[in-house]
Length: 166
Image (cartoon, rainbow, N blue to C red; front, side, top):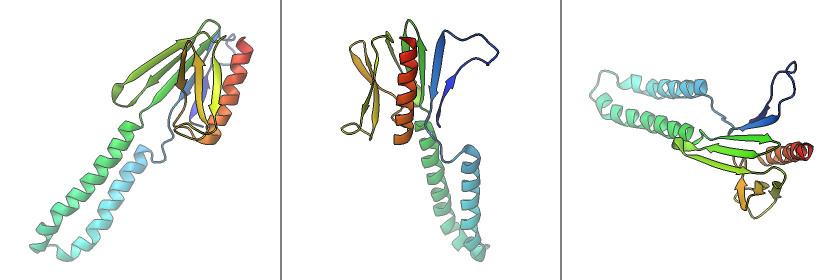
């Protein structure tokens, strides 16, 4: 799952706070990105071998370079936009959510965990099973980039931890 509870080692005493770290799933890792671009270059170059040494090559070469650059730019933009990380710190005194968005944008939210409620909106949200936290007069989304099943599991896990704190 693209989220994990960060806790101390089992030998350490129980921590007074719990941290949840969430990130979007990446279906194409960086190594796969390099292999994809390399494979695409190799496959496009095979038909170009027949025009090697002729002036036709110079007419085709800019379009080849433009196509490779376009794929590179689109995938790089996708990686930059997917650099979302959400950190939820849960303690007896406060619940803090920090969202590090794409291009360095940061958003913070803090509330008293005793008054925070975990809301799941099966319909009506931007995604099915939209998960939000409500408290301190605001409602904030949590893990909108997770799948439906992951949001359901996260809701149950987070609700259980909140109940143990109260």
